[in-house]
Length: 115
Image (cartoon, rainbow, N blue to C red; front, side):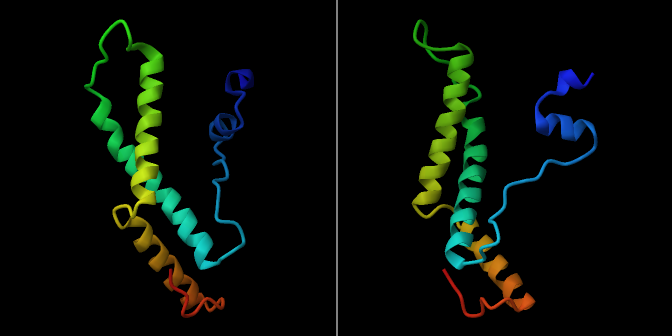
């Protein structure tokens, strides 16, 4: 049965082990936090925009099918990146503020760090 779940993430999930998620690494610099928070905001915005495309139908003979669905999801992701890169909706700012306050409370030397 393990050949059905050849992908490492699926195999780990099948065995009850959660796959390791990407992190900001050991660097706790405010610039790295801002970068990761902006990526998170871009993904969030892209997911929020995805339903915008659910009821759009492409005119034949130029659209439709699996390729159209893939293109629409990539388009929503790129919209999310563009919106987040242009200032976003404030999610990245809130995430950075919260992470910096947690780091300051832990006393790891990032006191006074902002944006």
